[in-house]
Image 1: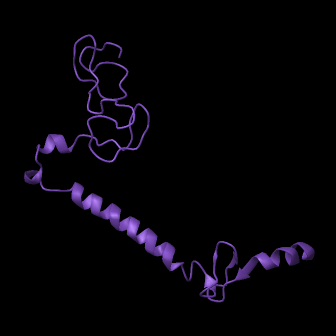
Image 2 (image 1 turned 135 degrees about the vertical axis):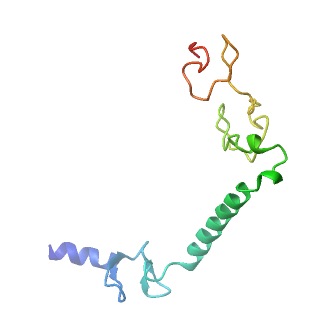
Image 3 (image 1 turned 120 degrees about the horizontal axis):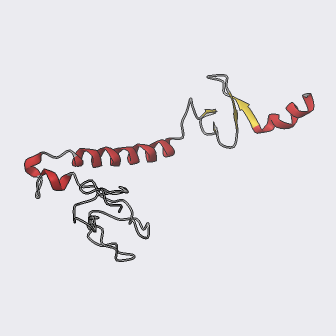
Length: 132
């Protein structure tokens, strides 16, 4: 057991602040002489904060007032696709057609029997019960 401990010891270090043993490779902030829990890598934290701020801005813009919506509330509530349902290519906004495969992104599935709108993923028409 002592041999195993002495073999692993160079790979780990104890933080003088929290007394936690951490690996030197990924959990130790060499610049600060503390574990990354006590002294996070500021570059990584800055990048994470910027990404978080971008997400907050998206949420803030998504909550615009009804009167600011050019097409009304119904259009705003439509799902905005992040990727094409056909080829799974990433999409950069509300598009009509996929830039990769040309799939119609705004086509709504309809029942072939009665023509009613069918929700995505439905196995049967909500109007007539016909299998989709």
